Image (cartoon, rainbow, N blue to C red; front, side):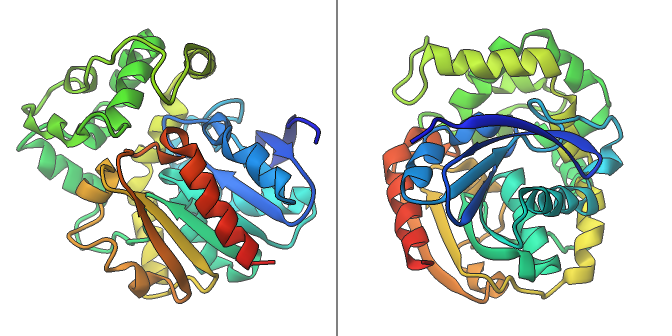
Length: 323
C-alpha cells in the first residue's frame, strides 16, 4: 500500500492541509488541541489497510491549515463548514467521522445540522453533552477562576498573554501538556493551584523522552509545527466557546441519528472534569443509535497515541459492522 500523501486545498476560505491514504469508503479523523493530523498517525495506515479511504486534516487554526485571527471565525458555522467543504472537495456525500476533543465536537455539530453528511460517528473521550445551561462556558470558566486555576479562563482572559507564554517555548509547553494529558498524570490536580496561576506552572514536569507511547522524533514533529504556526489558532477554539454555545441552542434536544461508537478511558481529564456528573449515562440522551460504549483502562486523554493497538482494534471492529 502507498504511504499517506500530504495535500493542500482551498476549503471554506482556508488553505487546508490534510493527509490521505487508502481507497474505499471515506473516514475522516478530526483532532483537537494541542494536536495535529499527526495525532492519528497510528490509525491512518491501519484503517487504510482495512479497505478505507482515510483523511486526517489539520483542523482550522492548527498545523498547516490557515489560522484566522478572529475567534468568531471558530464558531459552529465555520467549523461545520470546514467539514462539509472537505467532503465536497473530496467528492463524497458523506463519511464516517472519528474525532477527539474539539474535533469530535465539530463532528457532533455537523451531525445534528446535516445528518445526511454523516455515515457514522466514532467519539473518543468526549461524549456529546451539549452545554445548554443558562451560564455560558466562558462565564462558568470565569467563575471557576475565582476559586482556583482554570486553563480555559487563562486562555481567554487576556488575549495575547497566553499566546505569548506558549509561543515563547513550544518544546517546554508541549512536553508538559502532552505528559499532563496522559494516563500517567492526574491533570485535574491543576485545580489545586490558586487563581492567577500561569498554565505552565500548573502543568507537570515531564520525564525525558522517549516515553512508552511517544518517541523523541514524534515529539519533535509537534514542536516543529507549533514553533512555526504558534498557538493562537488553537486557543481561538476556546475563545469561541460562547459563540458555539449560543449557536447550539437552536439544536437543543436534537439527537444524532448516525450509528455512534464511543471509546473512553478511565483516566481521561475531560470525562472526569468537563462533561457533568454522568457523561456516559447521558450518551443515549444525545445519540439515537448508540452501538457501543467501550472504556479502556490505563490511558489518559491521548488514548489513540497511548494505546493505539486497542483503539485500532475497536475502531476497525466498528467500521466492519458498517460494510
